Every structure is written in structure tokens, then in C-alpha cells.
Length: 216
Length: 203
Image (tube, rainbow over all chains, first blue to last red):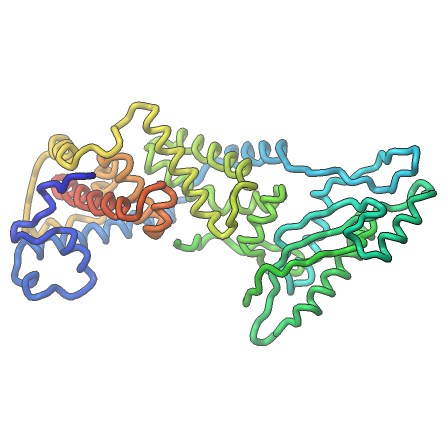
């Protein structure tokens, strides 16, 4: 517990913090006639003026930025430690094969985020891509059955199946009331198409969680 | 928190800007491009804070690097992306205070009397109350403020700088300094007193 220093009481007995807390209002009857309070208020005003000037000077000073080398070093470390996550095989492996061609989950996520950015009505926040295990019970039944049948004799070069989960914020303004189901469906279609075209894997399911709705 | 007026909205195809919450979430996923945007947006603030705390530009650059490498590595642990800015300030402030402690500079939070005495001893006491010239020139005031800030305790200076130069709220400062809000209020009130005393003596 910090002791109250002797300097905190003005000559008139008032606490300097209380006088300063009232700096934005007109001086009260006592303060108007009190030299101590008047001086204290004047001191704080001078300090506020100097502070405002210092704050603005800092913001305006072009020399008050770290050198480019610092930024580059930070980014180099980030890139070296980038969270690549899982590698996803581009092709479904046959019974005796392992696929050599892989793509990082990060790369697929970048493609997916661009779909949202291009559409303009939805902002993708986090994004996860998962390889489908043929016969995965969490898939819709008919898809799982198709996948299970297909896995039995898979020629090489069949694109992998993936599921995508995204968490998004939807834009909705007075002039443009988004129908959220419509926006979500448009996003789904966009993701399926973009990933098929740019990555070359099949998106069999897109889970969209609308975390937030924002106005512009 | 004050807006950084110099930052232009980031351009992406089809969009005029991406919200900071989305940038943070993407950086959490490992997207370096989003991290770079955040880095360029906040590195100046961290640098200015570190210069004010350490009075050494080379060390301030080290703080910037240490801070943002830590930000990158610990991003996945940040549960709420909306408090990203305050979280960055917390990491940066802790780094500054830690450096000050280990380099054996001024102890944190000496008594008020100690601080006032030090200021009065170092400068020529020249109390001129009611002096028309007490309204000093612009440059002299700034220089005085700059000098007096160096005489504050580390904790008082940190709270004052975060409040007055970075315009954080009391709650944000409390989070950054990991102190109760009431303690932050007290530190800032005492810092103001010490500065006023110091500037009155300084000529």
C-alpha cells in the first residue's frame, strides 16, 4: 500500500487529485478565490498542453519508426516458423501406394480466404481443411457410401476428398440486407469451385459458422 | 485507443479492407501475409513506447523484434482476437520493464519524496509562481517534459506514457501492466504531480 505523499495536499487543504479531476469543468466557488487551487489548475493545463504537443510530435516524427531491417528479421523468423499444419495428398492413394504430391493445409486455406474476399459479402476468419477418410461416419450417408465404394479399387490420379470448415462474419447494411443462407450457399459454391480449380482436390462438404454480422 | 491515421486500408482483390479481427484470426492460422499487415500497423507504436521507456533506440529496436516474434509464436494462445492491440502492448510493456530491471536502472516505484528530491537536486530550483514567463516557450516546455519523464519511476512512466502518448484506457493499461485499475490511476496521478513539480523546477 502506497503512502500518501505530503505534496498531495494543497495549501488550502484540498487534495490535488480532486482539483485535477475537476479540470474540465468551471472552477467552483472555492477554487475561484483560492491561489493554490488556481495555480494547481494552471499547472495541469500547462502539462496537458505540453503532453498534447509531445504526443503529436511523436506521431509526426518520421524518424520514430524501427529500421526496415527489424521488420525483415521478424518476418524471416515468422516464415521460418510458419505453421504449415498438415500436408494433404492431392491424389487419393491406391491400396499399395502413398501419394507423393501434397499441398499444405495453409495453401488451401489461402485459396478459400480469397473466395470470401472476392465475394465481398463475407469475411472469412478461421479456416480448417480436413482430408476425408472414405467411410467417415461424420459425412452425410450417401456421400460416405459413394466414397466407401470408390475406395475399393482406386486408380491413381483421383483427386482427394476434403471437408472445409470456415468461421465467417457476414456483411449486412441498410442498403443491402444479406440473406444469410443465400450468402452462405454462394460461399459454399465458391469454395468448392475454387479449390477444385486451383488446388485440384474435391470439397465434399463445407461447414460454415457465421460468428458475426457486421455493418460497413 | 487512438486510430493510427497513417495506415491505409489494406487492398485485397474485391475488398477495400479486411477487419483486424479477421487478420488476427488468419495470422493465428499461420498466414504470414496477415501477420505482416498487423506488424506494420503496430511496430511504430511499440517502437515509440520502447524509446520512451528505455531512452535508447537500438534497445528499442530489440524490443520491437522480441515483441513481435513473441506475438507470432503466442498468437495461437490468444483466445479473443478483438483484444489483439492491448495484448501486443502487454507483451511490449513487459519486455521494456524487464529490460529496465535487469540492466540495473532506476528501481521501480521509489517513494514520492525520493523522486521529487532527485528532480530538484538535478536542476536549478527556480520556483517562479505567478511569473508571466511561466508560460514557457513551446520548445522549452517539450524539452522539459521529455527530461522530466526520465526521472519518473519505471512503473509511473509506463502508466503515464501508455495513457497520455498512446491513449490507452485505464482498463487497457491495467491489462498491459497486469495491475489493478486503481493502482494504474494512482500511478498516473502521482506521475502527473511529479512531472508538474519537475517542470516547475526545470529551466
